[in-house]
Image (cartoon, rainbow, N blue to C red; front, side, top):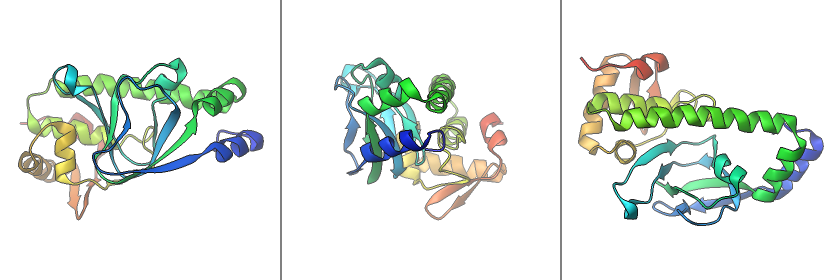
Length: 212
């Protein structure tokens, strides 16, 4: 909203919708037509491929405070990924028509979307690197760092509300192995494990973490 003028913000607010997605429910499904540009108010989502077509791959987790799916909205193409709620989540959205209207009129909105696309590209390149890592501690470190992205997910801050089971779903590890990795990262001074979540103490160290 900070990028929009009064007229643009008023139209966006009038079009704004919020829905509640239960754990396991799909917000977007592969092959379905795009209808909204989505953002997450509260909860946790997972972006993944269609497991029916081969080995399941999690592209990224989506914590609160960020928008997602702008590439699909720009191209007006069917979804090529699934977005699934890992727990009860509040999802916001504006219609494709309003997205296009803002894109045609607002320089600030265009800059916001371009920055989103650029940061998302970097995130997906990082996700491919994570997918090829065999060391569990490094996989957890890189995956956690991607969830503390200050541009894509400004609402997270320094504390991410996430369970070890949920992190395991995103990383592809058991809850027990995630617990072990988190304790290793805590001992290295990168994070602090808190009740119901993880607090980042040194984001750059988390991004660069190498297992000895």
